[in-house]
Amino acid sequence: MVTGSNLTFLLTDDSLLESNAADYHLSLLVDRDGFTYAITRKSDSYILEVGDQRFDRESKDDQLGDFLSQWDKNKWNFSAVSLALRAIPSTLVPKGLYDSARAKEIIQLTSPEKPDRIESHQLGALDAMMVSNFPSAVVEAVNRTFPEVQVYPNLLLNLTSVMAKNRFERPLQLYIDMSESFMELIVAGHKQLLMANYFDIATAEDALYHISNSIKTLSIESEEIQLYLAGDIELTSDTYKLFKKYFPKLQMNFGFDMPKVAGGLSSLRKQRFMSLLNQYPCVS
Image (cartoon, rainbow, N blue to C red; front, top):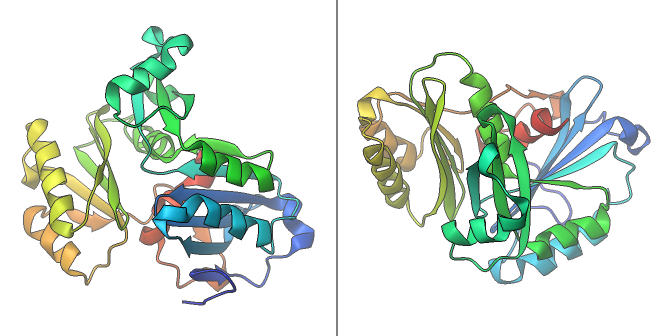
């Protein structure tokens, strides 16, 4: 690990130069616990820098804006900037039934959270629309620094990658991306999406409960499903060992598109940043 000014975590390659910013894509990933970013060189799709900043949840929005306003790369002329938001209320609606005038009503039917900034995105692989409730304070904090930023639900990007793999017949797969206080879950297989959701968690046992309950709802046995883990988890951790007891077909998810990293990032734990590293291939 290399620590940098104002950052909890930073890995960077020597080839990263402001003068080449027009060839770079900046990917931002924000959730309730903080944010991570990656800078990808568009000409060859190599990732040149990954950084992470944790925030106090109570004042996260202000801290995010303060960090970006002081960040040493906030004036770089990036070719493009994308922002993905994790663990936000979202729901899928068949495209033929979607009515933009009722987007707010749709999200209220599936989430108890107060409607804030309602956005809709097309998910072509499922011929559906994803309606999401974005936290406007987060979007505005990023938009002040990067006015041209494109904003997406993180679940949409991960679903895009999962369903691209399921264009062909594949066995059942369960994808888990864990953070400190929540996890995102996707179940797919046999050319279909079976479930997509996120859950609040405090312990590994919480995560195991939600996983087990989800597949039980789908009438799936734990022995028959391939479980892919990503996020805040290590192969040597008690959490990994706990999951291995219940899911024999278990392995780490290092990225849907096997991201390429420059030499200065050779020690990067790709599974920790799976959602972040998945962002660029989906939006570039």
